[in-house]
Image 1 (cartoon, one colour):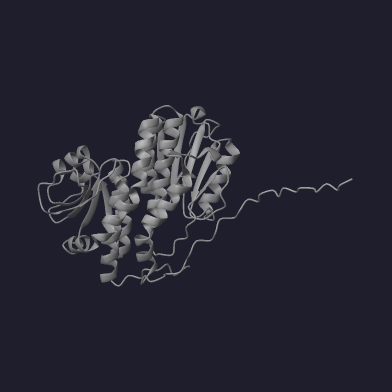
Image 2 (image 1 turned 90 degrees about the horizontal axis):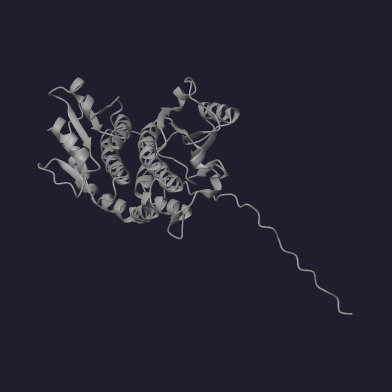
Amino acid sequence: MKSQKRIFIKKKKHLKPVMPSVDKGHFPDFIRKEIFTQPELINALIERYVRAEKINFDYLKIKIDKIKRIYLVGDGENYGCVLAGAYNFEVLVDIPSSASLISEFRFSNPVLDKSTLVIMVSRSKDDEYCTETIKRVNESGAKIIEIFNFEPENNTAVNLNFIEKGAVSTAGYTMRYTVLSMLALYFGEKNQVITELYVKIATKMLQSLHGKIKYVLENEYLIRHMAEKISTDKLITTGTNIDFACALYTSHLFTFALNRNICASPVGELRFLKSDTDTIIGFASNENFYNVLIKSVKDALKIVPKNITVNDSFFIDYDDTIPLFNPILSAVVSQLMAYNIAKENNIILDNQNN
């Protein structure tokens, strides 16, 4: 009798994410590296969550048709990110959505139950406020999605597989914005608010971000030239809707670059702040928002997509995509401006805590 061979099938182990590279390479500092590697970082992120031309976050196990309200919470520069996310979730998913700072969310009285989804955006869950928020949400029975730079991926977490070493967030911000936009598209289709065709077009635009960000980076010399013309004595950043969210992020960047507080204001509120000596940077991701901007502000440096006709010479434009993703490109413009101003001011560009 012939002996039978036993065949053993090894079970696949869950692989731990590979630690991302944290050396400067050929770049002079980490901020510059993080700005200029954004095309590859965002591309890798998209490739991870786009399969067969469809955005896929099925592993999160969220039944969006059971959700009645969404809270998006973020800290620091991420507040602009979650504010834009709240606008996009309401439009694309058709569920009431609101943005909050994590530090304030813990002191507020949100409705937390099994029909609530909390999306938390931060560099790391090790922050005390993040830990307390996660505990509070879990105890309430609400659902949670955590977007962190580098944490093990599970059915509540999205891992960016990225460690920030720059003194101010650049690539981290655009990656978090990208993930929030992808989640809005994913849940919007699941909730039958947007069509499969719309998501397919948006996915194509997502996949084109790589080249569009490179286009912005290749024009750094023009952006630097415009940055040199900005008077930074009394600087205000502005926009409306998702562009106000980008203005908030830009005020964070310029606060870093100038080493003093820079104010962001919605366009409609400028009349309460603006004086004749103010310098204004205005953002408009589509023609409607541009018309709102120029109606209220005549003498602003305008950051706009190429499809908008600008009537003066004081503007920076970029190769546009659909309005949902235009704020990613305008954020890269802001990063380059702030980076060059910070260098002129001899600001420390690497995070000294790393």
